[in-house]
Length: 125
Image (cartoon, rainbow, N blue to C red; front, side):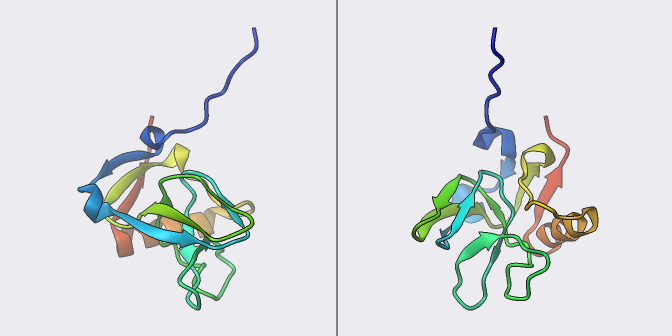
């Protein structure tokens, strides 16, 4: 019998949030991005649009600005999305990090989420 691996759902990622009118925030994902549920994101200062976190950048996307609460495929055009922007808890196993991120960069991003946004990354099941 073939094995089916179910992708993560919002329930796998999000373990706590304040009223969704407080913790969640609508935003625009920049064209050229294809981001998964749980992706840690940054906001490009010049446009105010969301991109995948890029710890090596100097355009604002190097600062963790939340976690996506839905997958967004903006490969060809800007698309609306929803992020956990403040006061919540996410499960570490469901958080999606950019390819090639180092442990030190990941720790720095987790600290940014915690200190600036009160988003905690915790061991989850």
